[in-house]
Image (tube, rainbow, N blue to C red; front, side, top):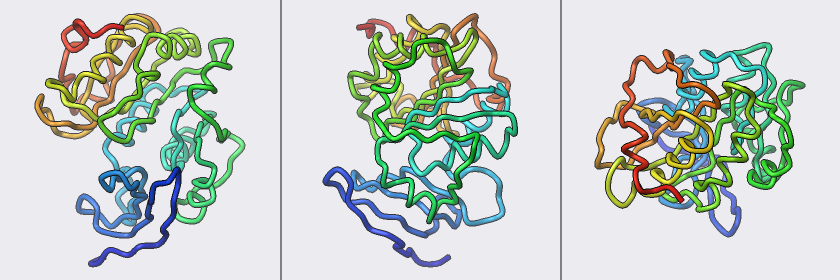
Length: 255
């Protein structure tokens, strides 16, 4: 694929978006771009390589294969590429995906191979509102994929939301969150607040790079894991090293 091809243009929440076929990170791909800084928000490869297009989604899939959860909650379903990958890889799993933009579902079906399944429940609504309605521990794994840039809304990085996540987890369940941040400097502050809240309210927290960038200075996708129980190893991440200790990252940032 030598040229960029725009398949769809649309507007959501007063912002333009596109679905395009192009060369992405060296692979032929179909990608959903948000208007803010042309951020790639969902995508599928158009080649024979089974690896997911985005490193952070591959980390989430690796984690799912390692934990073998029975019930997974995904906050931020997007084009449903990750929910579909998880149910295809794990025949016993049930996934609930929360997505606030209803129009994405038809686009996911048309452009991103989404198919309805008895094991994938899609709920159109706000992630925070949904979390408030969960009354009992339900999930082995909660994946939080709500943040498309360096901004993590205040409501999602405080103790109250962390408490809602913890309350929804079964014993030894895991919260896995994707965020974009540096590990030092001003762009690290929202992430530090989030890590502090997770470490205090949910349980032992670890931080991994989604890709092969281990810089402390430049923003990158980070995977933040918190377990509702004793500290654990994540051998599925053996290829990358934990890049920062949460007690250092979160120091002085708890609210």
